[in-house]
Image 1 (cartoon, rainbow, N blue to C red):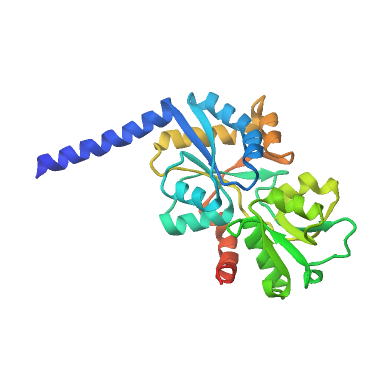
Image 2: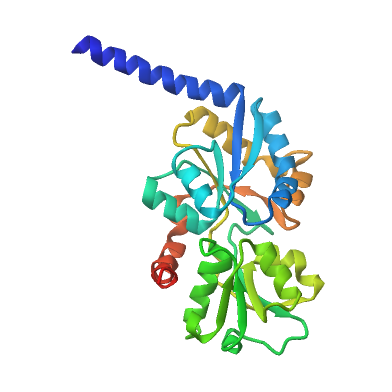
Length: 282
């Protein structure tokens, strides 16, 4: 029995070591949900992947899932080395698969929180959420934190439900912006980050959500802790590196860096999701 136990222990250690050596010396996957079109995500994040490749002495390859569900499953099953998550996917994954090692959260304009925004075209007569009654409104994926779940909470706070308007869903924030600009919908909702990039094209905000912790990087639970720390430190110091500003601006013009994150940072969002998810699942 003792010999069998020792052999099992050796095998487990070898497997863990093999994973760590693979991650350290060969290739790391940096995975994303398709909150924007794949080509746009690749363009935004390739400078970050190049920076991490240099810092970690391993090729960092970007992977964009075909949909939100696939990305959540890949992250939950530890099939991605590094994974980008919105706030809601992070909460859902930890509930279903258990805790994931947290790396950093995003900081825009020196604030590590984000908002959803309802918007319409400049020439629209819509000025508030209550004006959306009877209108055609578009959200993003039903699994998106900032383009569906938080906006739906805002509707609920205003005394509206999906029965009070014509609500549609598209597969990413960018399509929500474009379809609203083209007049296919009277109003839409997305993250403030994506909205700000297109605001000057003819959009204006009509309502903002409370500030929430959302964008976060996590790692596979199988990853060696030393490598986790190395990745985290590389991200935390990025805004102090010579090339750091260019890397950050590639991701978003108002991204100022990455900061430390704790699971408790998502408690406010958990409270919102408890109210919203049952309604969206009807």
